[in-house]
Length: 404
Ligand code: GDP
Ligand code: ZN
Image (cartoon, rainbow, N blue to C red):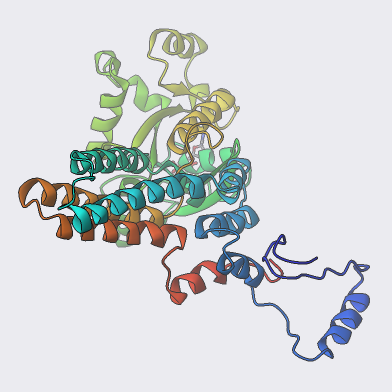
């Protein structure tokens, strides 16, 4: 296939052969005898494609993410990125900033001459402002895309014996954590990665929260608290007996009830962290009581039994909904940032644009201000690969498989 209309942009030959190992070995051996041939490095085709300007860096990352996607939502997000959704977005920013820079340079060079539009500086300021607005929207995405790419961290907490480990096993549908009637069985964080309705979830079961003299157990409690505070969603489990002792009036505002209960264990969820409450062992209270709870209390509370599986579908539905909200629907709306690298460079870009405005407003130093646009473009270029260093490429292409 002659270039440049190939994946790498170079001339390419493809051999279609039978897949038996001996056939492959014989063909590789034959090719290996041709002078100047060697096996491709991992990701080398994609790297060449990038270096030849066929794709940008975000599209290359998209290819890697498609290969590594484990759930349907991850695959869809990766596919959009591979397909150029982020490239188009950032190219648009880039073009607008390059136009602004060109106008500023014209202003610097020709400001003495008359044919220059008098209002040009204000025009540039407005154009840069609109890029700032779009950048801000891009950055205030609650990290949806990164969360979807890396997995949503969900942590189950509660007092000993309420059924946390049983819940983890029931949700993951495999016996991962040890279940026992002995309080203090789970002492370390037990983690299970699984696919929840197409979303990648890292579910952690933790040691029961209580005061204890046992050194190992109290270390377990410390880890439980620290895992909870660093997770995206905290699932607080109470058993039906504990729930019976809760004053009904405190249940009117579910979120603040859950947060105050968590606070009593030393867990202070931050603003964008989600919390939910599950009441387990519903099989141990009379049916009338369970029914009354379900009908009279806010819908946020889920009642279930890990033993009889009552309410399990509702529970999984609720968790899936929350996880979906945390990741967003990858098919709807603007493409999301998916890597920390995107975010940190765009933040730096936005900061430079802020300085640009300040410099024009306060000092009216067009030359210095233009330099800030130049820097902003550099940070943007780092995201797309218009500006790159070999080491960054090595990191990005290292994770590819051979032949891609
Ligand atoms: P953890 O300490 O919170 O992790 O609780 P476990 O999952 O180890 O469960 C503690 C005990 O409660 C075990 O004996 C479980 O079999 C039992 N258990 C868990 N869920 C239920 C439930 O829904 N109903 C009843 N009756 N017992 C349960
Ligand atoms: Zn446990």
